[in-house]
Length: 360
Image (cartoon, rainbow, N blue to C red):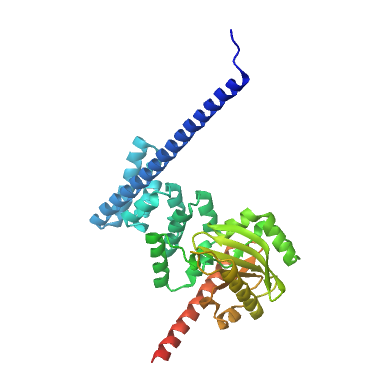
């Protein structure tokens, strides 16, 4: 019997491996489609069940009837279809239909969000908060774990969006829903939680920068989806002098370069001038065709609210944000963020009043 050459064996093996890889790809793709279809179908079923029970209860206009019907249905359905249709879960379906009353929006969201995503969002009390997490989850394709982590770290309250008047928040969320259009107010946050860096009480700017580089994946997760790292200590030569920007990123959704400066102390007025210089250099020498103007983030140990207000940074392409190297207790963080929201909205109200007086 003639022996097959080694080369022929390798060629045959190569064809088999390529064929097997293609088949694996087909199987994986089909499974993903089936999984997505099953998730979307489950979400649609739960919404329709919740909506139907809600309509039945509203027709009767009796609270005690609602309690009775949900309990009775839960008992019957759980016997026939399992614990997924017990009273507790039926109440969750009712709540789902109540907090997401628009069927078309539910259909759109269900293409990316599974039932477990909705379960994490449903308990949130504020409608704008729920809409924010649902739409950002859809656009940035968060896993259920990522969604829960972002809710736990109060991401919505840390965005500039949450500090706007409700009318403007609704407008930004509508643009995100209808056009997938991200704005800086949706992307940037304050404060940034950098507890994953493991920094102790005493550290230098170099230590902070080095820790970020060591934990770049975690840092980008905290920044948000869409960020790509470009450079550390980006060199700029201006009038023969060397300047170095701490970190340079690009954000795909915003189509902008994002310059980041790290400061160990509180924000100072001089930091604004430094960042303006860097942004103008980047705009002149680094910005590519089709990109928007670069934007800067100054990460400080303290924000200096009055400095930021007097310098009118909210009208510029510079954002000042505080960073926390340790995650504070939730009640402390919540109080801090609610105070920031209150101050920001007061400033917006004052500016609106002053603007109307000038027009008169």
